[in-house]
Image (cartoon, rainbow, N blue to C red):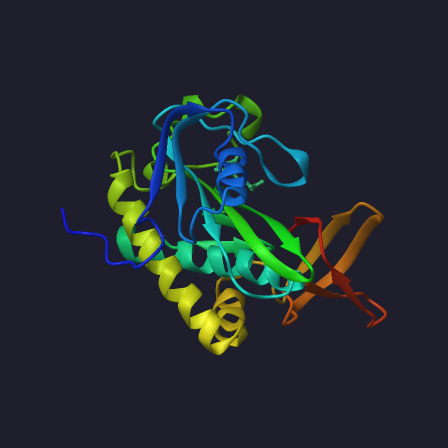
Length: 253
Ligand code: BTN
């Protein structure tokens, strides 16, 4: 197998057979000062965590369940950009490695043929208006079989293997390509800013230009998704032409 070509991401991997959540471990390691690019990987998570307080089903050996520590020297309001960056980097890695077409549902669900195959959860530690660390949690259903998904998820979720016709996919090679793709995007982002990622993100988006419903904690907003702002906030145009800015929501297409 060829070697990993990154300088940081994936150079240091903490491997667990089973753990409640790689996210939890990565938070601890970040607070202990572990370097940027440190990865926590688990074969199985017993309390995998999703966005909006949901759980993330992480059966043993079926997926890539990992959390990556980044330490960008940026103000905390830039953190959503990193979520979108991660989604774009993963889409590009999956498309190039496996030749599967992916779409992104705001902010960071990766869909294949309309079903969710990847979820991303970014959490951050900030001090005095600077990011100390960002924990990018990535869950990829790689070889999950139909039976392994809980029945209530079967019509919503899929795995890369299911979309490829059932053949098992090598998780290590895919993880390597993802590390490389992430590092490349992240370096470009630190040097040149968010603009090119925003353009890429919009090109993969399922929602831009379409009528959607955003369910937020303060209620439902309906309208056309018009794009994302430079901060990674979703813009929805309501029927009266008013633009709503969505920071956190569930999107229905
Ligand atoms: C979502 O779509 O709701 C985000 C899911 C994120 C799941 C990953 S799996 C690795 C990491 N550890 C966790 O407990 N969650 C993230």
